Every structure is written in structure tokens, then in C-alpha cells.
Length: 392
Image (tube, rainbow, N blue to C red; front, top):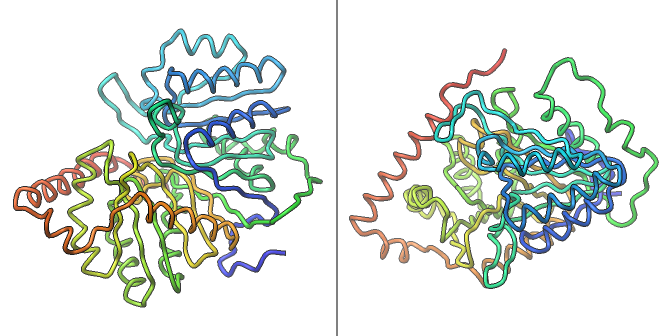
């Protein structure tokens, strides 16, 4: 039996977990899961492109539908808006149930409403893959190009049933009247799992529906950590509450390490991040910038026993303007393995941003760019989130 988790609320106990790095390994596992599915597949993703990677995945889904597997595919209505109509018709003609997650209002150039930012696949209500990767070329390894740095967690066991139910609720638009799900029939209650048994819980952020579980998981981690925290995040703009908890952890002697992008796909976000570097360093928080490629992952691990992986970025867009999904894993073996992976990334692919390094970069011009980017991004985040009202 696994060691008891002191913060065990919401954890399922009977699961196997495996860390999957983005790129070829991730897509190999995704295709393998599709090919072995017997009854049902749910795939929900933020970005789905009609490119070689997208075609590879959807062709596998078509083959699954042809052999009688029920396939549901959902993509965000804004991020995947460029999907050709003919491509969507081909999916439906092949027997795939396809749907966009629709915002409140949209056009080619305008979007008003929260985004489906989570990335999840569940097969047979028994297996699931949860992470930060979209279905498009830049997340896959290609000849001459390595994939963006990202991670997912593969799970087998009880948590997959909860994830299946979550997919159904998302598919139908979260109706209060929906009480029963096909997952009950698909899930085999008698399955036995060899090997390590991991405690896993599903965590959701959907501010419109009063779900802020991932935000809470991070705050709990910062409050409970005793020795070390490592955070890898692609767009790191913590709010005031997060910064207070981060500061408190550092003050009580926790070694806090943050791995951020050196090269970003959104340069204004990177510049805004650099505006808070001085504050981080002043409070004994270690900063690394990843140099290998674009960093897109969203993971954290603490005290060699707890970790979280998923789609959630540490900023108010993820906290308030998007539907996000993470898995919290309480498993010392898994956490230690994740720490080793992150240690290797730090050693081989990162530069440390020390006070001296930052001072050399802090020209008057750069400081102006960082400050103006920070203020601009804060304003944009406000525009993304101001119209939401929590339900009573």
C-alpha cells in the first residue's frame, strides 16, 4: 500500500502512472492508446491542426471508429477555428463525433468567452493521457526540428473513470440534469493493477463554475513544502496570492526553483516575466531559463513525493479565463523520477539567471520593455476575465 497522503482529499487510490515527455514519445503513446481502444475514446484538446501530426492522429481515430469504437473529438472553437470545413466533414463521415467547444461570441478576429484549454484523452474509461500538448506539428519531433518541451502523465485505473465523466460533462456543456454516463458501463470495477499503486486526483479550474482546484493545489504545495519545490511553467505571471505563498516558502528555507522559457512563442509574455525576475531573486528564488527550444510544459514537484501535471499556467488567464485540467499525483517514486528529469533539463539545457546575469541584461531600454510588457499583459488578462461572474 502507498504511504498515506496527509492532504488526501479527492485522491483515488488504485492507479498506475507514467511520465511521458512531449514529442515522439507522447504521440507514440497517444496512437497506441487509440489503436488498443475497444469501446470508447474521448479526445479533447485546445489546438487541433490539419497538418501531418493532426492527420496522423485523426487517421488513427477514423480507424478506431471503423472497427466499432465510439469516438468523441472536441477542439476549442477559437484556437482550432482554422480547421477546414471539408476536414471536419471527413471526420464525421468516418463516424467520429466531432464538436467545437464554442465561446459566447466569436468571429475570425474576435473572441469573447472562456477557452477549452485542457488536453486529455480517455480510452475505455480505464486509460487516460493528461498534459499540456496540442495536436499539431510543433509538439512533435520532426526531421531537423525537436518538439517544444512539454509533459503529460499516462494513467490507468480509477482516476480514468472520473476523467471520462469529465469529458462527457464538457461534451454536453455541463448540464445540471446529466446524472448518468456511459463511463459507468465501460469501467471495469474488477481490474487489478500490477506494479506501483499511485494516489491520483483530478483537478479542474473553471472560474465561471466556481472550480479553482488547480490554483488551490499550487497554494497547498507552497504551504506544505518542507525542503524543495521545482516549478516548470511556460507563461509565469503569478498573482499576488501566489507570490505571497511563494515568498513564505522561500522564507522558511524551502529551496524554490523555477524553470522558465528562454525562447517563447509569445515574446510580450516573456518580457513581462522578466519584469518580476528582480523580485524573485531578491527573495532567494532560483530562476532557470530553458535554452533547448520553446518551453510549453506546466508541471511542479515538491519534496520528492507530490507532483502536478496538466494544462494550467501560473497566471490569471488559466486561473480565470480558461477551462484547465491537471492531475495531482502523490507517489514518491513518480515524483523522484520527475525531479530527475527536471534536474537533467536544468543541467543540460538551462542557464541560471543570477543577479549578475540579470544586471547585465537590465539596460534602461530593456527595463522599459519589461515594465511596459508587464503592464500590457496585466491589462490584457483583465480584458480576458472581467466579464465573468461567479454563480451563487
